[in-house]
Length: 218
Image (cartoon, rainbow, N blue to C red; front, side, top):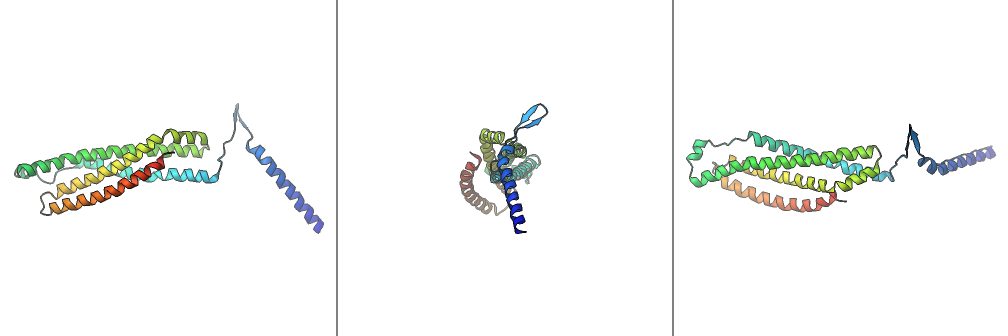
């Protein structure tokens, strides 16, 4: 009995060694499909595949936020209406009337810029995710690497437009808040508080933007 078990173990080891020795040969074997010869492309490391997949999936958040800011800014561009009537504006002093009309005129312009930049960021990141996942799913590593190298500029511009869209959206909310509280007694307090808050947010945003720009470069 022990002699038979040892012989079985030796035979299984020899079979596994021959299979492992033949593995590199079969891995690089050329497949004949019709009249074409196709060499299968395999990923070098499984970790690299998951890294690249996580890199593409992280851009979905940019798609969601850019879509929201673009749609809301586009809605503000089409549906904005002043809260103070023209008769009441005419009764104001010339300085206050000019100040209020400037705010009302700036809101659609800022909303339009936010919508345009958000739309550009949405298109850039959606195309990157779409074609990147298609290349990874079809195991075309060389075209995937070439696609990422050639589109670095597009991703950097998309990240910049994403941040600009958020900045214009915040400025749009600031202008709408001023317009809605222009005839209220607490207008000055709202103005000072909002300006201070936006300044601190801008400082943090500038730091994050400078560091995050390197993510989209090779």
